Length: 219
Image 1: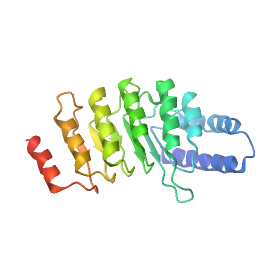
Image 2: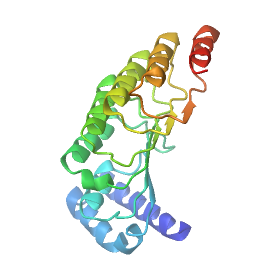
Image 3: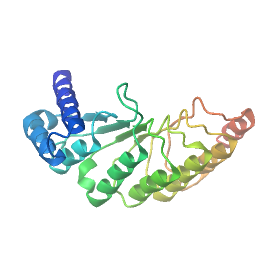
Image 4: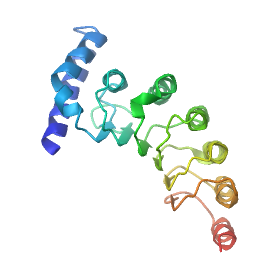
């Protein structure tokens, strides 16, 4: 319910303010928030983390079974009161997920936006897919991350190797050019490729020739 989501957001903002003032240890605060808001957290199916909400808060709550019905998880570096989030926050999440996959056992949608992901982060994501850590993932949204051709190449390699059935792949606004598009085309044409039903490449720098090659290959 919207009311629950608003209350949780308010609690998270209060927690972030306390952390910035360093009035109490982080772990103590996260425990208090988890206890106070647990009835609401148990019902949440969607969670968005932004630059003003510490990733540690989500991880601590999740590791203590706070999100048993979580289906959609979003992380964005865009927050009007804070700078863009650092890539290491995503890497911290990936490492924790690798140790305990139960954190997102039922998630089917993962959105990581405006996080300036590097190729290393994409490789960690591919490692999670290889190990089946995101067993139910079907929607992967990575728009606005400046992946460029190298990042897209690493992602396509990871998806092709994991054979994860991604139905929806969003790579909009990532600075992708013809070289990166060639890797996307190769992935789509591979017999081992995941059955992608919806591919978003909006607002990139892909030439007409690369698009024509893709469309002609898929006929």
